[in-house]
Length: 194
Image 1 (tube, rainbow, N blue to C red):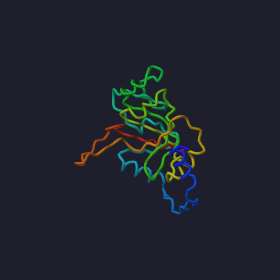
Image 2 (image 1 turned 30 degrees about the vertical axis):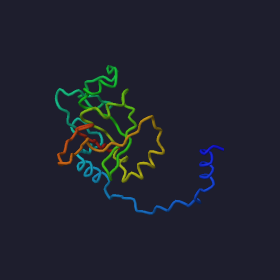
Image 3 (image 1 turned 90 degrees about the vertical axis):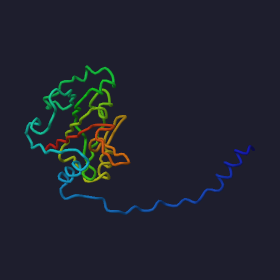
Image 4 (image 1 turned 180 degrees about the vertical axis):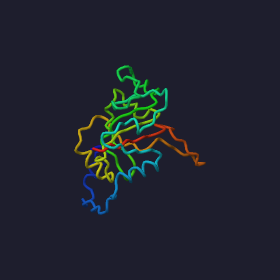
């Protein structure tokens, strides 16, 4: 028996006894008004939420700079001027100013949203676009990440699912805040009544 085999045999013989995992008993955060809480939290992390009443046009609720390159999976975004089929590779996404898409759900406790990153041919747009505009149904704004993960378990997912919260930001040791350092510089969330 080699020394390696002796060591492994010794480890197998001297295993600690199994102990059940402790019960995790804590109160999950909930809000009386999840929409208002989501909006406040999103604003605190640098984003902006707008409630779009049923049967209202989206154009009154989002802001897009003139002459911007807009890639949109939301057909109601009238400013879209980049056709997805004209994008040849993921590096072309670096020139996209606005990426607009629907999201599966949003979370009030941290101002995040969930996307399966399947709206566009290349997933890099979710992280390379300068600005994001997303649309979520009001009924899909949940209280906390526990509820979000319970919903996520029921969903059919592709190879990449991401929770994204607010625009990208970082601060150095001198506390100089930089927005858009490694991701979108702004996030607009359109909350639509369903």
